[in-house]
Image (cartoon, rainbow, N blue to C red):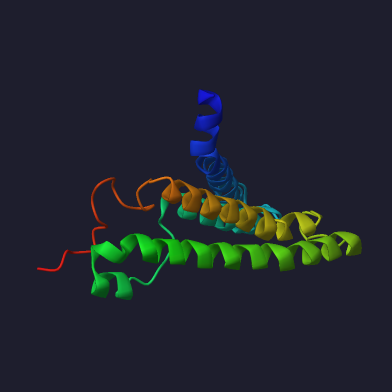
Length: 174
């Protein structure tokens, strides 16, 4: 059971670490080949771009898990810490709906790209593998939003805040 919890807690981080390590290695090799050998790698920039796309969409899932997704906090600041949980639930529900819609509409697009058989110019990589970053990453973000809602319904603190303390931008009314 602890292995499953460790995987659940660090899944996105591990994938992102692998992608970022590959990105650094590929771009370092590109610089080395360009300036030391005098012959740049033709495929490295394209692969780096595609890895960055995957990194972005998996990063959305990690941001949702840790409560670090971008949000406007005007109303929680104006209403005070008592309303923090209600606004967090509203934000998570809205995010989950957005993620579900994005997955719903990106899966058929990815399938169409796969049927066409479009390949990237430099690598010859099937483009559906790049387009699959949207349904995979946002599908994971959808699951993380549902997970956060479920945990909050069981009494867990609002994601992104420390247990027992309001968020840093929220101040009690004096």
